[in-house]
Image 1 (spheres, rainbow, N blue to C red):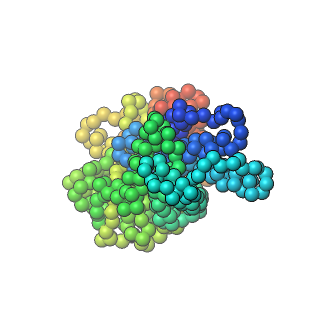
Image 2 (image 1 turned 120 degrees about the vertical axis):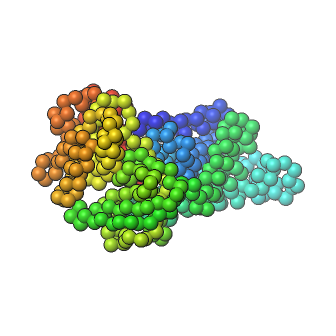
Image 3 (image 1 turned 60 degrees about the vertical axis):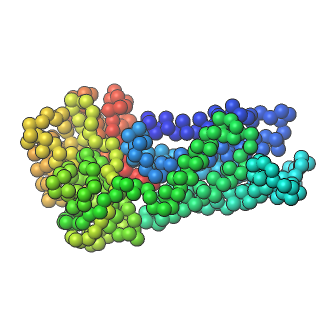
Length: 454
């Protein structure tokens, strides 16, 4: 979380700081309309900078993933930037539109205009400079930007509404790329012309250009195109009691391999699109098989036990994520809540293979907390843990109560020397992290998968 917090502040403060090098909000003499003019420029710069970075993150850039500690963290930053852009854009819109309404209502008196604007008498003059041409486009840019703003607000709100179906979210969220392209035109035309020759203008030029490229990639379906591999479903194993399905695919050549704990986007039905699933198997290039364990948590995943059949084609994009159990701690504590057990299953299989080859591994305690218990699934987990030499602790909520930091510390007295790897419900992870850090666990020793893609 530290990296994405730093990233958020960086994206917010750098354009704001460069703007203050070029202009000021403290106009002299201080009057509402001169202040409004510079404030609109300020909020426009910040909002567009934030949206541009968010658009670039939507393309899942590989070079940023490791720096942000995984695609899950990158998407969390993308979400934060989207909310920030929404808030700043609303303020920007209100200063522009609301002021006009207040003038119409008689609350404000508009000052006399100092010369013609684009679209007025000045538009009839010969266009001899870029600045003059941009002035002729002001009315169009304002109108298009206003409607793009309305569309973007609706799409951003839908993205934040959890009950909005994922398949519709995935389709409608792409329309933000269209809104972004319109807002890029809005920005280029309406940004104060003097800024373009200053650092704030150079930054906006780079960010806007990058955002335009990213938006076109989204609209043309090129996101992750170089990381997609076709495959075929080999086996579908259903565990009805847990509402879980385990699916094994054989991938075509081109898959680069993956580490335990990573995930991929899987497409089995084109109309539904790609869904992110954690990988539950180690990679063997000889067999090229990959396994996913999926639980019915939404409208689409609930249909998978019936919809998936051996022989069906599929497309797998990835791998993504940095939840890969790589650290120098002599001991590790794993906590898998519900379907969050999946990345640990993959690591168990990997450790069993390493153990058979005589490789050294840290001592591991695996806590699996669940509301439902299936004898078949439990037997498989126990066998994997035994083969990997991992201490398994299974807690069924109704039978054993909930896992707390106090219970974890009592079960593993050497917890202070361990790193903790958590995958499960976000609230559970936050409570566990808060407790352990309060008791002295260094923040860098707690690893949490933020597997919410919206």
